[in-house]
Length: 320
Image 1 (cartoon, rainbow, N blue to C red):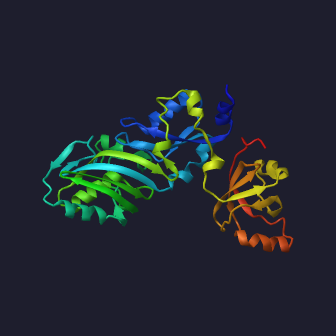
Image 2 (cartoon, one colour):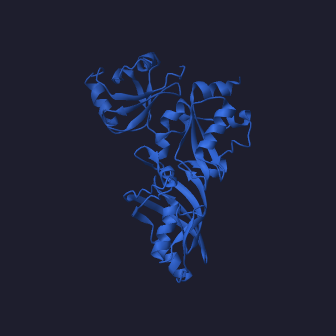
Image 3 (cartoon, one colour):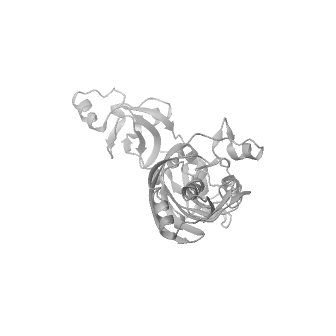
């Protein structure tokens, strides 16, 4: 077994993976489990089989930090057709209506741009979102169409709009939980004709870009391992360095006090999550019980035994 393989099994790491069109996100996970010979593999943010693009994958104990990547902004390219309405809001679904769009290209562009900002969006009935513990698309296939209440989403950017009736396309940056299929359909409804997504590519998730992603179906185990990213290098949380002598106590669940802390590399606020580091390795993720600025006050008053952090996730795999 290679040293890199040991790292993935015994430490925490992230992969920027490209999910091909036509496959489920779970298909990607199964392929990685098979090639890396490890069961503990998960992903942040499901991509529908219809879609392709960036899928953030956690390997080993890094699966425990995937929640921090689910809340990042996402960027997509989408191409849609006006006048067509399907049950899934994409071209894979059964056609329900066919209409003619009477609006001109200028009106279409204005409507697309009008969605920039916050709006209430209804998730599509055919999606990976859960209702009472079961995926909506599974319920829909059973004939149980669940209409969930609308949820506020935010469209940060809509750019590179191209319109060649009946087709339109654009790039869009959105908040977590935004459905691009629903966005296309909402644009179509506002144009009084409906619309259906034809092509959907997730090009960015936070700092992860499609240009850097890897296709696990085309690479060997050795080549996949070359793209392994340690959690410490990619997780965007404030860093706090702890003394080596206190690492074992953290591993044993002892809540960190001021005497544990060597220095704080970043500011943090009470209630925020931070990374507790030692020798550039992630020891734990903890919730701050004090503001960064208050640490100096505690030092001056010699309150070294006062708890500063509450442990949330401990990474005993980190051999310091």
